Length: 118
Image (tube, rainbow, N blue to C red; front, side, top):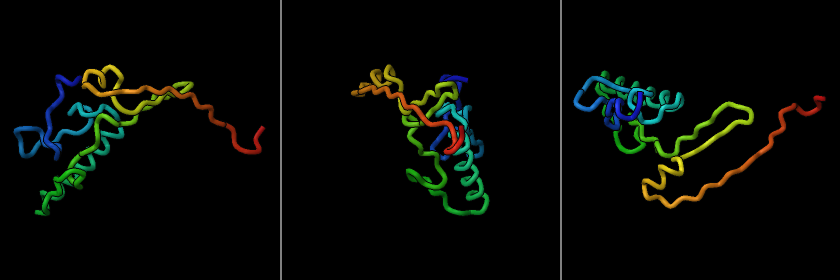
């Protein structure tokens, strides 16, 4: 799956051109991360229940039935040793979007033993 084969969705996560098919997670290409897929699934599930019960949809920005997350600021982590984390666009993508950027690298050492252990 890549951004060219992703299903285009509306803010309510309905596949464009349908009024019944929802696309959440990797299939919509928004953010290919588990926590984003779960967030989208909750929003879509709430929208489906609202439609089934005749409740008005809250489809404004950050409404209960939309996945409004800022897809350019999703945190990501690679569980290696040491762990690597990132937030936001890559430097190349930010430059391509004509965004003024500043990259900062930080190395942090964390205590990995419990207090009082050898």
